[in-house]
Image 1 (cartoon, rainbow, N blue to C red):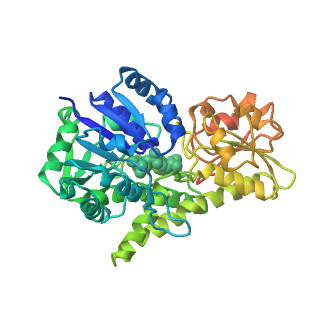
Image 2: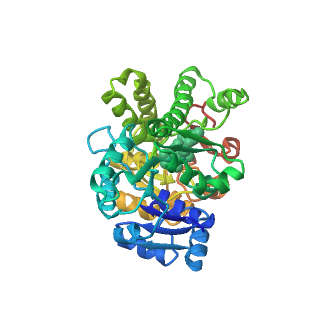
Image 3: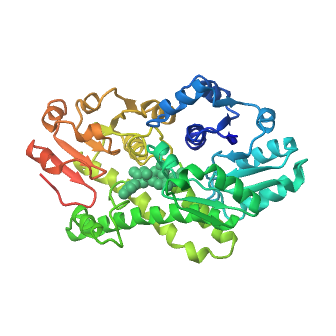
Length: 443
Ligand code: UGA
């Protein structure tokens, strides 16, 4: 009989996981406390932008294999082989540490309703030691006691590629404290392991740490190349050529080595901070002290971007029009959490410019967060009358724009490429001054 699965928390991670589990052939119940989100998902509509997820969701809602609810009673009564916890763990306000209140509220609501043996698998990113603490809480609050077995199964999906990353992940990691939990999770993931996906089985703490370490490594790689961009600017080098040359070294590799405005989003920035906070609690803060510098390099890129934009406005933003292309924290997403693009746009607005933003998918989310910025319906509309254009999120459609056409609507031909993604030569040939982080002036 097909496994029965519940997925608690239906944001970017949970909604994708639920739809992908249905794709693997399981009976799935998705649960969220947000009634609006559940109404949309029940109607087969994804309440955010994630390529390919709409189709998958609609397909499995139609077959009835994937259903949604706001009720914990229904979740507990579903007869699930596994309950996956997929709620978010944001940064605590005014601190580095992770705010675990959503994970804890799932445990507190679910545990008293579980009266049969079952496995609960956490997928949320949590500090090391959380799973052990929650295991004790399940044992204390649940009628099934120690027969509720907790596992940790971190998720490595990227927004924008979430479906592919879930159905064809680079690896699976399952942290377990019992053979039964291991057997149940091995069963659930058999279609993936049969297709060759490696599975690493660990203890609970190691599984939590793998996720922390992966995001710390990725952040470090990005900040490394951005630090090289700073040095290139000072020494008159070209960081794009430097990055290309490094990428041919198989030990280094070219992925996550694209210099620019740096990392943002709902994961990397808060995850490295939570990792540092946990290391401090464990008495090994020195081991992760370098992440402070990784964070600092990353935040400096935003300041440098504002400085470059001001230079292109002849030293002052007062009375100037600035066009910002991109608002999402990266392309193929409408997520604006800790978006470098919006951070730059808002700083420039506060320094007296008229700032008009255009993003192919994230205008609405951006306007909720920064209602005082102006928003346009197209890249050209945003560029109208601009003294400078800032390219801050590298959507494909920006790469395809004709510099000649864009130049007809701006008041000056000046562009700063915050993502090193436009073809500098093309813009230069059309009479533009092209500036980018970590590269010599073109034009
Ligand atoms: C990241 C990780 O890549 C996932 O493996 C992880 O599952 C996820 O966090 C998470 O913890 O949930 P995501 O935040 O979706 O995924 O986005 P990434 O593709 O990692 O990009 C993060 C940021 O780094 C973006 O702002 C992007 O523009 C920036 N970046 C990426 C660079 O500045 N340079 C690069 O070379 C690559």
